[in-house]
Length: 177
Image 1: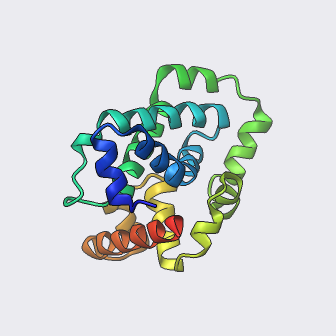
Image 2 (image 1 turned 135 degrees about the vertical axis):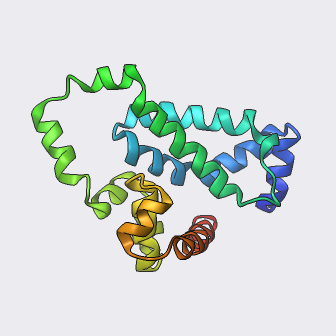
């Protein structure tokens, strides 16, 4: 089996099989992130499709030397999901939620364990150190900026950035096995 870097280079050269393998490797983790933001399986599937189209279309803009692929695609997924929730059509579709559904969303919105278990990535997060879980919760699931997360966790911004890079590397290692 090809290493991820070899698959990335092959995908950048237009190899659809390499792209398909990367999809298989990363789709579960990305779907979890997307679902945690849009909170609807159908919307999450739609965003997921958009994310992988963006990954394919913009693959040549990714540079292995400038950052990790997982971080690059994670940011694409997160930003696309956030864009979806900010769209007028999405907001209009959510206006008709029943009060029971709304109360359920509020009751579970801060419970990382329930959210991650429901979206199928709890097994990956459980393997991380508690400090990583906290950082990922703030940055990914709650959508904090690094600056705001550092204030909330009460650590220097530089420390948060360093720990976040290490946590993302650990998560990548866990996801890829």
